[in-house]
Structures are given as structure tokens and as C-alpha cells.
Figure 1: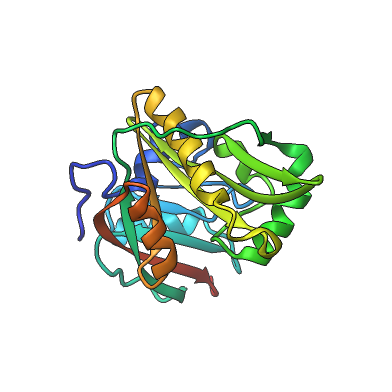
Figure 2: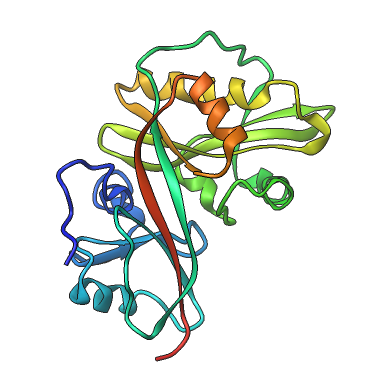
Length: 231
């Protein structure tokens, strides 16, 4: 059995689903998850046989659920491991940056088709039709086109995650990710919280950008995407 540690970011999905995203959570005191149309993430209070039993009840056949854990997990046989990868969890500095927000717009339900198209092209990570409901999503438009975006994903007491940082290939090299991350970080700091994010450990370009913006490595997290293949 792998027990939850005391720091909320160690079991970050569980921390979000039992605090500021409690109203979105499906599940109970053993396992919770986001609705599939919002995000694929789920978590257990403890990584154990009992926890997996509870997670199974929340995962339909042919459904997928993504876990963030400190150690590699061994799921029961009715879950197939679809993907395993190490992710760097990085936390931002407690310093505001000077950012020009004049060109930024708040994105919402009416922008979902464009957001989904940009995500499909740029592949920043999981993004579903109602992911925008998790927090503030900002975009930069150029001649009416959505050129770049970033937003808030997991939110828990004292912390907010920055995610979906992506730029259309036609508009790369203009510094849009830095500006969007800066604007989001400033807003998070203004609320008395700390920004954080996750990045694949082999995404060296993104990691370098985040370090330049003041983010530092906190911990390596194990991503495990499970597919419930049999009853």
C-alpha cells in the first residue's frame, strides 16, 4: 500500500478533487475522478487494492483514467496500462512579472471548437470539451485566429496548476507562452496561491522555458494512463 503523504501536491489530483474541485468530483472517500468530458484524471486516497476497487466503480468499460503518483503503480488485471511516463512537477516563484495583457482574451464555451482544434494541433496534453470549466483560460488572437492559449487546470487549497500551454505553429517565436504564463501566474499569486505545472521530463524545450520563467523542479511524478478493458 502506498500512503498519501502530507504535502497536497504529492497526491495533487486527490487534493484538487477533495478541495476546490470538490463540486466537480465523482466518487467517494476512497477514489474520485473528474467527469470524462472535463478531464481524464482520477485519484485514490491510498494506492491500494481497496482504492483500485473504488476507482473501478468510477471507470466504465472502455473508459480511461489517468493517475499521478509518486511511485509506479500495479493495477488489477481488469485495467490495462495504456501509457506510463515520468513527469516533472514544477512550482513557480512568488514574484509577479510585468506582462502586457492587452492582447489577451478570456476563453469560454463559445471558444471550445477553436481551443480543441489548437490542442489537437499542438498536443499540450489532455484537453476535453469542458476542460475550460476548471479555471481561467486565456488566449491571444491574431487577425481573429486563436494563436495561443493557456489556462488553469487542477486547483487546490493554496495552489493552482497552469496547463494547456500551446501555440499555433503559424505564430511560434513571438513569446506568447511566456506572456500567458506570466498573466496566469500573476493572477494566481494575487489570490495568495502558488502556481505550479507539469511537464514531461523529456520535453526539454518546455522545461527550459519554465525554468526561465522562474519555475523549479519540485518532484518527479509518475503518470499512468489506465484503460478498463474487461469487467
